[in-house]
Length: 272
Image 1 (cartoon, rainbow, N blue to C red):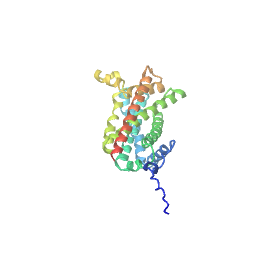
Image 2 (cartoon, rainbow, N blue to C red; image 1 turned 90 degrees about the vertical axis):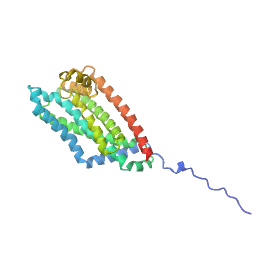
Image 3 (cartoon, rainbow, N blue to C red; image 1 turned 60 degrees about the vertical axis):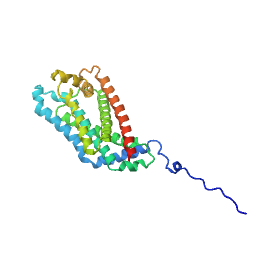
Image 4 (tube, rainbow, N blue to C red; image 1 turned 180 degrees about the horizontal axis):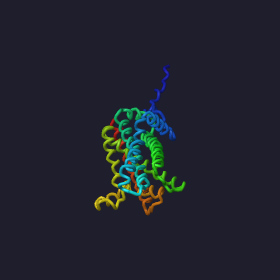
């Protein structure tokens, strides 16, 4: 008598997939990956420090006496240089993200059981740390050339917090630009446009010295309240409502850039 046996159960395709990584394991992996790339890319780190430092020396020793004959221009210009440093450093994120999107590495990441946002988290976290280090070096050079802040330890902490929030803002924005750009070269060009915003602000000269039509732009763009907040914390100048505007601008830009970047990542990765 023939014994009938049940056919083997068909294993669902979803059951063959590897389980998704739990916790922040994927984020740790991509932070480590971005950190290794940063260590190897010494030129980018050097440019993030050297270019703002050269601008600070140029404005202090070449233009400083013409703008402020009393010799105190260095105290005025350093907060703006700090933001320039943050902008230059964050701009490299756009190139790194765009390179990931165009070299095919994202295709491999999509086969892994991880959150797509982990890739961007690695870029953003390492960029934040790298740019804080570069900013600290620039501040050290500023102290050597005559920068004399009057901030208390608590005000120094608040100033670094404001700088960190600004760096995070610019990094998320540049990461989204890197996703939107068709190539690393285009990402570099698009990001370079944003680096001009500090020049149309109170970073290098008071806003009231500008033409009236330009004053409105300088007063109502996000860089000016951030600079005025840092300047107030370090130098004791009146702050007014600049602090609230600075935080509000940064939070709004982070929210928009993060949502835009997540949408772009899913859209571009889905095409591959």
